[in-house]
Length: 369
Ligand code: SF4
Image (cartoon, rainbow, N blue to C red):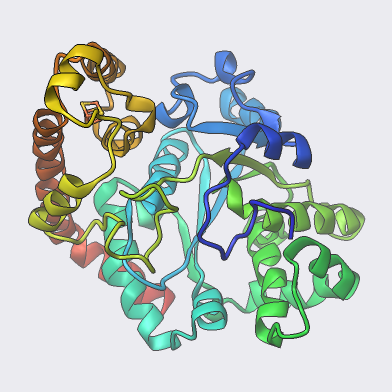
């Protein structure tokens, strides 16, 4: 496995520029002038790279059909890192993208041993409810569970006949200890990514997969496989965008498996406040020093919360940065301000979850009776 890119790992790639060069990822900022009203993660450089996004952009701007594909693994609670992907889906949905949302229960089973019935419960309470509450219209998406999709499983099996063990080992670093369901799982993932282009799901068309950069191994394999089967199925290589990984409150990769440092959408405000209070900041050792020399927002995880999620107005974010750097505000005051924003967000989200519950139950009954 090349250093820094492990879809099942818990690290943060340290040098995004090196990763881009090593894996041939293109710079996203060059496309920005062509994107009407880019998403805040785009204009703030959080989405920093892409493969073939121009093809999707042409359709988006020109009014043609394109698909957007993503998966959520129901292995724990939904956190802010997951929200970043959902925010992008909402943006694409408002721009005519056909959204495919996969509940990756086979991945949760294969990688974490979570039984399928439990995956269904987690998917509903944590992921689907929050997706709808955040603003994604699930009835306008194709939402499905991997374990219930004969099309995805059948496609995975068909595509697997031209992928050999050496290839997946080179991409994922599998060893002799890797169990067979984990070995086979990448083919399910490839089928998830490519199945929107099957005739029964709309036929070949540009498809974008918005991912954290650690998911690039899946994309590389899917693009190789799409090329091998381009004549048989007419597949276009899937496009992708890459965002920086959301860091947890101590600077690691935000993950459901590290509950003390991740921020979960269904946790009560008091839990968020306690965690934010303990978060790493770019502050100075003493209040006096901070007033004299200013803080460093680039190292601050509270600032990062606002950059990614809680200060959607660029002007307000800039003001926060300037006040910090000038020493006009110290970390305690700043955290209290951010907690106010967070509390409002959580209260509204909880209310929305209550409102959309009957609709999401309907969706779930249809896709996983
Ligand atoms: Fe972070 Fe705010 Fe402290 Fe600046 S003042 S380092 S932005 S918490």
